[in-house]
Figure 1 (cartoon, rainbow, N blue to C red):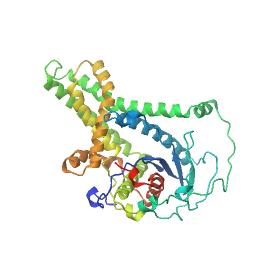
Figure 2: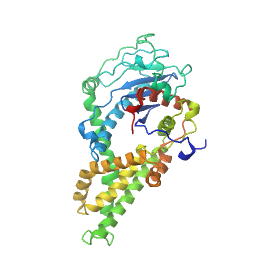
Figure 3: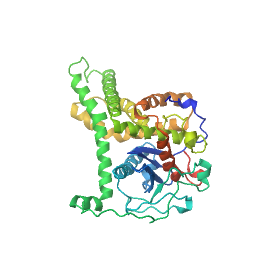
Figure 4: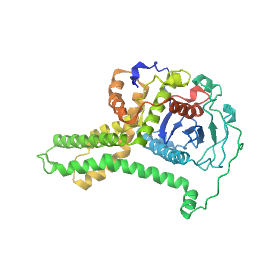
Length: 382
């Protein structure tokens, strides 16, 4: 299927704060007031669950600091949603082990989000799902919800192990640990490893850390080149995995749906289909900007011994992420020549992290997006 370039789609009439994350056979969407996930179940229906919206500290509003804070909070929510989608992919039921048939609902039917980390859930019958629009949602439409507790199907009870009991009691702490480990692995792979390789190769080159700022910049450019090679190679290898390719398809569905919403068109499969799978506010673009910003920042702190370099880079990761986040925000709200030039590499890299979705995936994307669109348009300002 031929991809459409971003310029081929309808013009953007609004900049939304809504963003998302691809899951296993589903999507998580996060809006200004709420978060939700939608997953295609093995029986073909769509399960929609509201998720707890992470409370942000005051630091989340401070420029160049808010990037790291918001990223970590988003990762915690994303890990929770990813594990939940894995349960659905294995055929697990809802927290109460009940299934609800599709039944049209309204915005007033939304229940509050429990504090235990799992929100309300509902099944959507895609055969009867009405096509909705951004304007429809503002008036109260959402993905169909069934009457709670109907058609209950109980599963055989399973004896809970000590590990399961421990994880159940400390689920929030485990989500934080998992998010922290994810960040740490990314820092090691894309920040520390390239510097270690560059420092090793340095000893076989004429470059010396005592020979002035020019050589320091050259060493950091060399390190940055290694960093980009590692990053692109990682994405290319991941794209060869069958399961990851389906995740990339849902990633493309997320971008297309957000672009359709930003254009002001009704959120229907037919309207979403022509839009591009690439979006300037994508996480891939953010990670690429992190790599670029790191070259500049690390060039100004000098080049020292191997352990000192690793320690300095580890300490500067929050600053680098904060600067990259501000650049993404700037490119996301601008349509000028300079913003397009800055966003261009990230858009090209999304050829590795997005795929053209099928219509069934677009249905999932619609189901995940509708619950997070705020009733008041003023609440969704980029």
